Length: 151
Image (cartoon, rainbow, N blue to C red; front, side, top):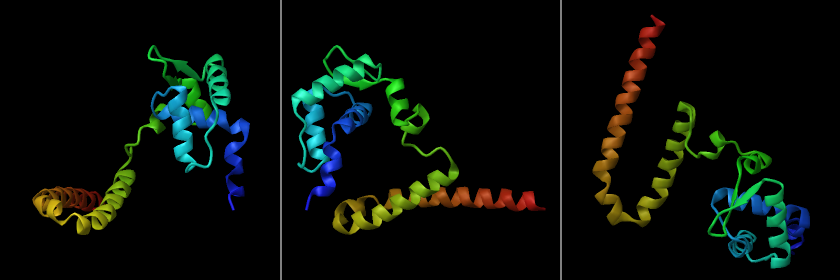
C-alpha cells in the first residue's frame, strides 16, 4: 500500500529534504527530523545518524550555515541548489496578472470560509465592500486609460 512512499526514504533525497526545510526557516537536527516525519505523514522519521552527518556535509559544501543557536539555515548557494532565487523565494506576486490570480484565489477562499464563520463574516462586510470599491475604482481608471490609448 505504501510502496509509493519509498522514494522518500532514499538516502540521496535526505539532503534535499533538509535543504528545503532549512530554506523555509532555521532548524536544528531534531526539528528537521520532526518536520520530515510531519511532511511524510508519519511514514518516515530519519535517524539522528542520518540527519546530523547530512547537515555536516551540507555545511561543508557551503549549502547551509549553522547559527549561534545551533539551528541551520540555507545559504544563497543552498537556495540556488534547490532552484530558489531570492526573487522566487518571495511569495508575493510580482505582476498584475499574478496579483489578479491571487485575488481570484482569495475570493474562492472567502466563499469557503464565510459560511463556516458567519459572525466574523458579518463583522467584515464593510471592509469587503471597501475593497470591492477600491478594485472597481482601479478597473474604471484602467478601462478609461485603456480606452484613451485606443483613440
